[in-house]
Length: 335
Image 1 (tube, one colour):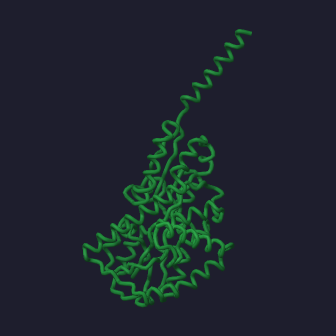
Image 2 (cartoon, rainbow, N blue to C red; image 1 turned 90 degrees about the vertical axis):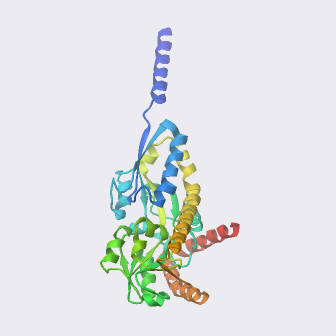
Image 3 (cartoon, rainbow, N blue to C red; image 1 turned 45 degrees about the vertical axis):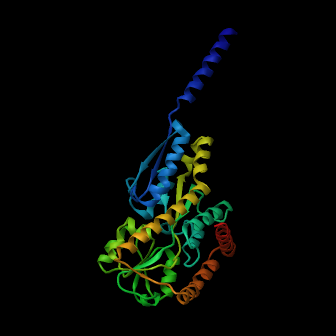
């Protein structure tokens, strides 16, 4: 009997030692953009560092920036779904059909800043109003500051863009571009410079951070600051990897992800956009085209059919649209 108890104690001690010295779970975090880009430097890296610090030796976060696990921005969802990377930064606009409800973020003249858009987007996810996440786990949602219109050549209003070729991403932008009489061109941010240099583009829908990250600001001379939607970003994790994580590590990841990431990410993009805009203004090489109250009213009226079209084409569209409006109004009411 004594020998049995001793053997049992030895087995228990062995199991305890095995769990105490278990190898940390390695998590590969990949992006197609460089380490210095806003999304990485201001959102993803701080999240990784916070998780690593709190989880300690239970996890080993490994970074793969600049496309080292896959450079194609249109293939980032496949990388994480198939387990090439454990976590990737995914742009829904580059992942056609996967996240249909998130096209709402691209609606022109809706969200006025990244902070309110980010909180509203996470709220939609928490309320179960977003689809496309069956094969992955959403760590965090955040959005850019609103896009603007950047042109190579002088304009005084959007009317001057008639018959011009304008870079857009996704069907929402394309529909709006056609309404104002321009020709939409689907071109990734990484290809914009070449397109401008070759005369393929006359204008682009892009944010201040994107114009800076990809150095496209040097190729344009006019900026028309109208809120042409925000760019939603997803930090997605491979579902199998997520399910294998200890529950306490999952909790740590979501403590620093979720709503916390939405707030931090949206604010980071707004702050950087404001700083970059001021720097360009101080340099004096880009002309800022003013938006008068009359033009603003006209532009919003022109955008209304795009809003109505999105609602009618999207299952549960009106409810999602109303919830987005409600969330944005709540954020504005607290600011």
